[in-house]
Structures are given as structure tokens and as C-alpha cells.
Length: 235
Ligand code: TMP
Image 1 (cartoon, rainbow, N blue to C red):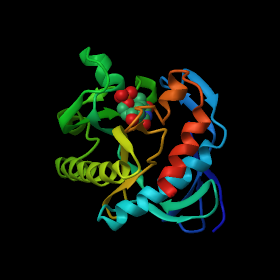
Image 2 (tube, rainbow, N blue to C red):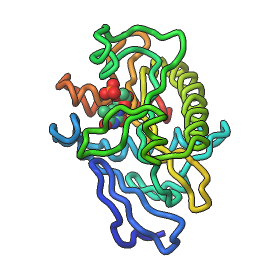
Image 3 (cartoon, helix red, strand yellow):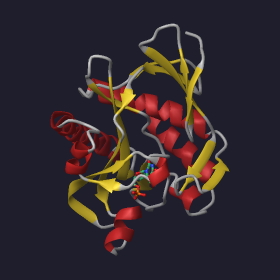
């Protein structure tokens, strides 16, 4: 499968057409941004880590009954995925307080919740991805009621599978962001990536941060954290 015309360039990935209109190639970059693109940098090797980690986790989720866009890894940075139309919602699941949750509600990071929380933000860079609820999403016709229910159920299932998987490699899955897409027949599948860019990972013993917060907060050893997560996940 060969890369055709570039269809899209995002902050961390490019998307290329293929000879099959139902398939595209995603290409992972080392570019890193934070705070809606205000902070910019490079995390050397990040594209390789995020490609391989995402593909491993997508295949694990498929085995556990979660439909995903994954088709085939082509090389270290490029993967064939099903062509979807992205539902413009960022779906965030949290198991432990951190990040914008801790800030918004004025609590410390590290509170372990009795049950996971879910929230949506409107995927819109110009507006800074504002928080929204399901009523807002339906009012703006971003998704139907049925689609939102499907997305919620899939997101909690992803959390169950990933939480258990990460526990086994001594990592606490603090929170993460998912995106979903519609296939041409309307079926909702898990899309985008699941990586240290889009999840918070804390070492279960030391509570060391092993994710993009090292870049966001200038904590140092960013590349080391990404490669450590790849080592733990891929074995
Ligand atoms: P938050 O605490 O900043 O809202 O982030 C929650 C989770 O979502 C965290 O694991 C990082 C991830 N995330 C993204 O993947 N993309 C984003 O643009 C933001 C703000 C967060």
C-alpha cells in the first residue's frame, strides 16, 4: 500500500489517501504541542512510539470486542486505517484526578475515584476544545443520541480493558482521551491514537509521570518516558 495525496496534517500526524477510498495511511510525527498549540517542540522518536503503542492497544481492544479503525502497520511511523469521518468530540475518561479536572474543581492530583468519570469536549481548535455535555452535542448535531450512547459504552469498555492491561505492567491509567469515527455505513469505531500523548500514565510504585505531562510541564526526560512506556507495553 502506497501513500497517495496528503489529505490532512494535524499537530501530531499526517493522513494520506491510498488507492482504496475506504483506507488511509496515518503517519506519526515527532512534533509535540500543548495548550492548544501555544507550546511547540519535538520529542525525538515520539512518532515511532505512538504508532507502535497505538497499534498494539487497538489490536488488544479489537480482541476484547471494541471495533477500531486499525488495519495494518506498514512501518515504524505509518499505519493503514479505515477511512472514517471523525465525530468532533474528544471523549475523556478519568480514573484519578489530574490535569484540567484538578484545576477546574480545585482539588489535588491523585484522588482515586470510586468509579470512572466521562466528559466530552468539542473538537474545535479555534475555540480551544471547550467542555460540552451530551445535550450540547445533540443540539449542535455533532452526534445522535444513539451514537452518544454507543460512544459512552465503548469508552468505558476501553477503560476496563486498558486499566487491567496497564496494571499488569505496573502503570496506573490516570486518564485518557479517545476519538471515534463513522465508517461509510455509519458504524462507530474507535479512531485516532492511544499513546503517551493522549493518556496519563503514572508508575504504580513511584508515581513517576510517564507521559506527555513531562513535556507540558517541562519535567525533563521526555524521550525516556515515551520509550519506557513502549518497552512496558510491547514487552
Ligand atoms: P486534561 O486533564 O488536560 O483535560 O487532559 C485529560 C486527558 O486527555 C489527558 O490524558 C491528556 C488528554 N488530552 C489529549 O489527548 N489532548 C488534548 O488536547 C488535551 C487537552 C488532553
